[in-house]
Length: 331
Image (cartoon, rainbow, N blue to C red):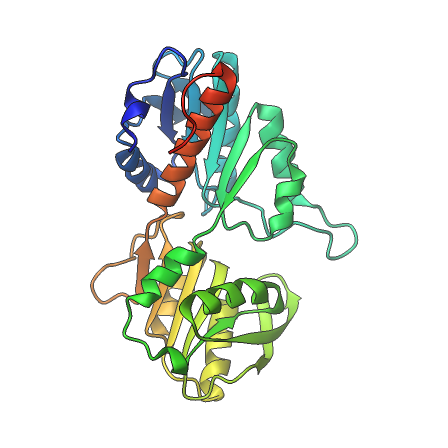
């Protein structure tokens, strides 16, 4: 299916795949799906912490795809790494530079919830464009409106149906299963997942007195004695999530499963989840998690490699064809 990526025609620019420090394992999986090799890219830091980047071969006239999740303790370094690599590609005369960002950092700050606050999701978008990024591929943004912060094409992928397929393999009684939205903002997404699985939906009603803290006020829907699947886009400290789990248990919920695209897992998040009254917590490999899928751990991981690889293939083939006016854009 992807063989022609390795053998570009005279009408197609060559595709080159690079990995940042934020998604090395996922980058390898994506490269394997596409039957490509990750190309050479030097990424170092000077003694004072400044980042250095250099492509190890020419990228002149090539379609460059740089895979980087912007998350973790070194989130700011990973953001700067992405900006610097984009600048290097632009100055090396790459035909285009696509930033593949499975986790888009600073996405939670997407509006002014209070006076004198920044809209940092917009700031990051401006920085990426200023650095020379031509396209963005990302997975499950904290809110879809972030796409509107860009003046360049944004492909917004979702892992929702990967989770759906994962849970479909479980031996659940779907008449006795409910998908739980962790807040009102995720209600539509929870409804999509419940429709896909053929089960009911419930919504947790919360108040958020400060960042990384929330209080569950109640649950809208029937969860008593039912298997509950909590679906979210991100788990940071897991404090809010464990609060929701505790509330569900108090209201008589049966087995509880958790799914989230981005396992950021800051602070004590992993230990909180391991000790929480859940069967398992499923995340994607958009952000590396060292304990995922290890024996005895409740944290499981599924890969978004094929989903992202399919998108890269489509972007590359369609872009090459549209510029050359030749070839077949169909997969």
